[in-house]
Image (tube, rainbow, N blue to C red; front, side):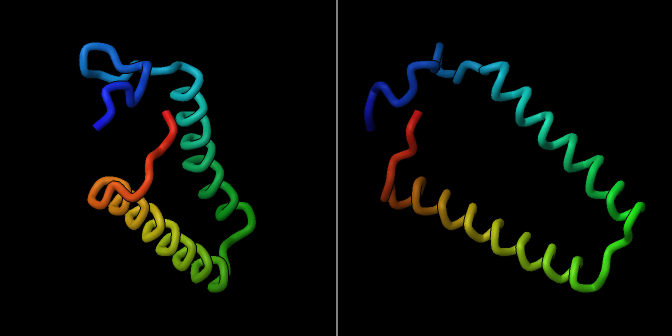
Amino acid sequence: MSHHLNAAIENGRRALTIPTAALFALVTLTALIGVPLFGYAHGYTRLDWAMGSILYLISGLGITVGYHRMISHRSFRCPD
């Protein structure tokens, strides 16, 4: 394993970057507020629920497979 995986690691812990954390929080809060608000204002059809469920499963599977390949097989490296 490389000794310089991330320059932001200090004392074994990764340093928190404020802009990244703020963007993550903003996107999460927007989704948590916006999705129910849209459903309340316009309503969801069966197609909306079906597409949301299918896309949720596909994206979750993609994330799981990607982490499995990265951690178990070390088949690729992510940039720092």
